[in-house]
Image 1 (tube, rainbow, N blue to C red):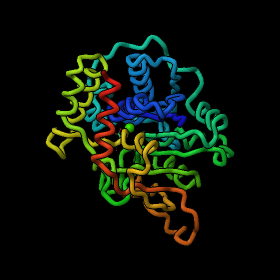
Image 2 (image 1 turned 135 degrees about the vertical axis):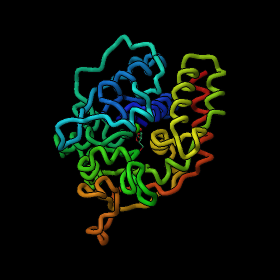
Image 3 (image 1 turned 90 degrees about the vertical axis):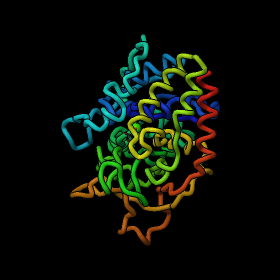
Length: 312
Ligand code: BDR
Ligand code: CA
């Protein structure tokens, strides 16, 4: 399966990247960067450094949009800097990649890849959906060609994590998310409904550390930092937001999905809320599959095995 990752790297984005690299079934054709946990350039630098560490410098990386569709700028919030660290990767110092991002933009790369690979391509987006929305605005014809899109974002059956309504990725660009979810393309929504059901603990990271490899130690340090920021577990376990989306692309059978026409609230106190589109209750063929349950133990075990083999 050909995959593009659209990331705001971010520690759990870095986990989604490692998972994708660790699965032979997935061919990562490129990584596009966006803003969110970090500024776009920071996130892209993190991806370049991680790919260099894994010896995967043949995978192209593209700079994406730097702010929401209808905003002038993006100002990183204190929560993102706390949860992911000032540098986005838990203050872990990585060797700087020798190469830089490609000169082509993320939006152009997405359009060209959709035209080139068609239905064979899966786009896994784990940040705000601005790059994809911009690609759909720039070249609406790609709607007919695009394969599947799996997003980490939203919350249908549980409260948000920014406020009672909104999940962080969707809240940073509700208009982009609305455009993507209402576009009619095949979207799987991997939201807080499922990503908060799966976890990793410091027992897991200790195993990577004991491998005594650069990759094992780097990921153990990053994820330990991330775990320490999770208040729900008193800093003993972290949620698996972004890796759940990457896993869902390969193993949808582990998820319970509800087919729906979805929309996004763009104004008022509920801005960023992902909700069923009440105007389409009698419209056939809902295009969004909302994940509402997951076989967490199977997913966690699979992720641990994949990481162990990759980091060794
Ligand atoms: C999402 O927000 C970001 O902080 C994470 O990387 C994840 O994509 C979770 O709400
Ligand atoms: Ca993310």
